[in-house]
Length: 318
Image 1 (spheres, rainbow, N blue to C red):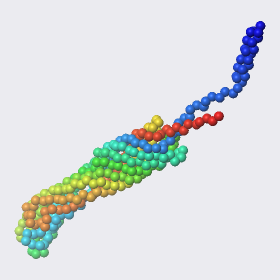
Image 2 (cartoon, one colour):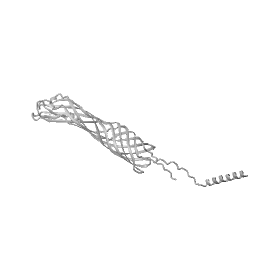
Image 3 (cartoon, rainbow, N blue to C red):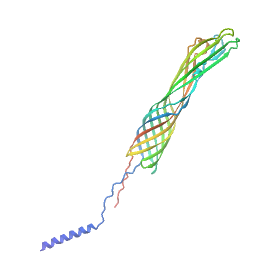
Image 4 (cartoon, rainbow, N blue to C red):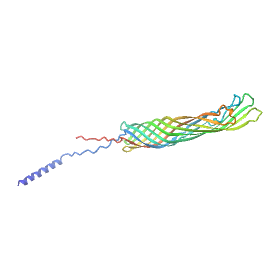
């Protein structure tokens, strides 16, 4: 009897405790916090694209040496050969580019990102320009009536120019359209390894009438020459782009940039083998070719962000 009573008491106590527990509120652990996306941090990546030349002007200027009669000091005329290689042209330099970029972003607010970026690209940017020209001079002598010297020429220059590499250091200011989509403007400093090769040639016809009653004498001669130069040029750039964080730590960007490196001046020299070498003060003519370097580059790039997708977990307090 006592055993039965004890068993019933225990069963009643257990059922009462279960019913009481069922009425108590339930406390479950909160779900893990979602990552808080932040653009702040360093990044590095690769890029590739194409550069279009902007048809900047190119100029060639040469001056011929004076032509002087043998044994006399009076100058009959200037040689027209080197002058005929002078002219103007359009300098269009285009080609593919590819390289790497490095930078740092700071997310100023929920929508504003500021940063700095540097990049350097190897290039096959090049262009070829040709100029054509004519020149003619005629000058009488003061010593003998009817004595004259004439010089006329046709010629031109061929200029091959381009860049071996092109780099920038730029500031960036962007706006987050969404947490993972950034549109930005950019601008700053540009530098590049420029080169130019100039080749010049002209055919000159010399006419010399020693006195009025003698027939005029003609002869042809060729001028050939040019110059080359390599130089690091500096300038500026401005542009913009869009960047998409397509997965944690990885972004893809498309960017367009106008750049201008100014001009490079190449000293040139032209040489002649004249049938009358003593008629010249010099058989060398000096000149200068001025080449400009500017263009628009469009490229895409991919970057790895070293501390993108920072996690700021929310800790529940009881």
